[in-house]
Amino acid sequence: MTRGRLVVHAHFYQPTRIDPFTGELPPDPTAAPYRDWNERITAECYRPNAEHGALARASWDLGPTLSHYLADAAPDVLAKFADADRRGGGRDGGPAIAQAFHHSILPYSPLHDRRTEIRWGLRDFEVRFGRPAAAIWFPETAIDLATLRVAAEMGVRGTVLAPWQADAPHLEARAYRVDLGEGRHLAVAFYDGELSASVSFNAALTSNAEAFAHERIAPRLHAALPDGSPPTIVIASDGELYGHHQQFRDLFLRALVDPDPGMPDRGFDVVTLASLLEEPEGRPHPQIRIRERTSWSCHHGVLRWGADCPDVHDGRWKSPLRGALDRLAGAIDTVTEALAAELPGLEDVWAARDGYVDVVLGLVGVDDYAAACLGPRSPADHRRRLAAILEAQRWRLAMFASDGWFWDDPTRPETAQNLRAAARAVRIVDGLVGTRLEPRLVADLSTLRSPALGIDGAAIYRHAIAEVGQPPPAS
Image (cartoon, rainbow, N blue to C red; front, side, top):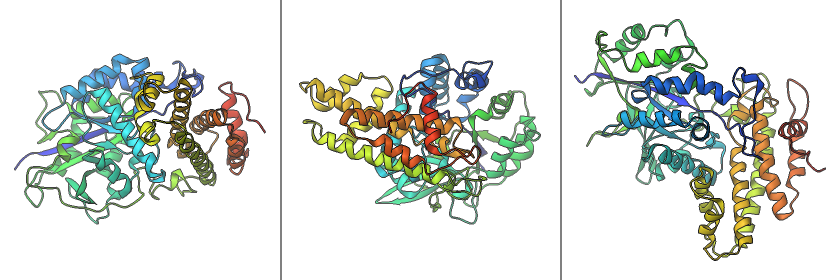
C-alpha cells in the first residue's frame, strides 16, 4: 500500500492595524517591549518559522493584510515565505495557498463583495509568490455554496474546512469533491478535529513532536481506505500558535513536518495541501455536501459575527453593528454607481474596484490607474473623483474584517479599527458628493451598547476616531 500522508496547515493572519487616514501604523504600548503587535508577533512567530525552514514542508496561508505589513516592515521575512513556497513546490504546487483579502465573513457579504475579496486575495497571492493559487483559505473557514461558486469561477480548485462543516455522518481521511452546479466543483479537505485541537490547545501532548507523530498520528494512518488509496490526515490551526500564542511551539512544528534524518521512520509522509486536493487522473474525489453558513470557530454556524451567539456571554451588540455597517455600505454603493454614471469612459465601476487592488499593493499609482479606467485623455477632475470613490470602497470593504465581531465587547481595539475604516470611507464620500452619511451612521451605531462599559456605539465610534486624531462627527 502507498504510505499514509499528513498535511499540517498553518493559518497566518493579522488584521490591518494601520490608521486609515494616514496609512501609518501607530505604536501600541500594550505590545511592549515591541513597538506594536505586528512587530511583536513577527519577532515571536513569523520570523522564526520562516528561518527554521519548516514552511517548505508545512502547508500555510499568509493573509494579505499581513503580507502587506511584512512587505513594508520585514521584507526579508516575506522573502523567506516566498522562498519556502518555491522550495516546497512540486508537480501540484507549493505549500502556500491564498486567503480572501480583508478576512470578512463572506456568507454575510453581498455577492459583489465576495467577488472582490476573493479576487483581491488571489491577486495578492500571485504578486507575493509569483504563481496563481490552486487553493484558498476562507476567513474563519466560513462558507456557503455561493461563496464556493465564486471561488471556483475564479479558478480556485480547493480549500480546507472543519469536519463539522461536512453534511455527512462519517468522514474518511481523504479529500472530497463538492458539486457546485453547471459543471463546477471544488475539492475540500476536512481537517482532523481531535488532532487539530490537541496541537492548538494541549501543550502536554505536543511537547514532543516524535512522540506525537508515533503515538497520535501514525495509528490513524496505518490502514488503507476502503478503495485502497492511502489515508491522509489534515491538522489545521492558527499560524500564530507556533511561537506567539505558545512559546517554542515553532520548534514543534519544525520537528513535526521536517524530522531529523536519524529519527525512526514514522510510516507516513508529510505532503502539501495542494497535493491532497489534486484529483488523480480518472479518479475524482468522492462527492460530499457541505453545511451552509458554517465556520471553524463558531459551532452555531456564523452567528458569532452577526448575532447573539451562545459562544459569547452577551452578543446583542453584534447584529446592530452589522446592520449599521451594512446600511452604510449600501449607501456608499449607491453613491458609487451614481458617480460612475457621470464618468465617461468608465465601463464597469465594480470591475474597476476589483482591479484597484493593484493600487493597494503599490503596483500602480492611483492617477495612472484612474487614467487606465477612464482613458488617457480623461479630465483630471474625473480621475480624481474615480480615485476617491475607489479609495472609499477600499475602506468600506475593510470595515467588515471579522475581528470586529469576534470578541465579547465592541470596545475592543479590533472593533475600533473597523469603525475607523468606516469613518475613512464615509468621510471620503461625504466630502466628495456632499452627502451626510456619517450622521446617519452615528445614529445607527447608537442602537448598540457595550456589555462591559454600558456606553453606546456612537460613543465608541467617537472614541475610535479620536484615538487617531480625527475630529468628531458633525451633528
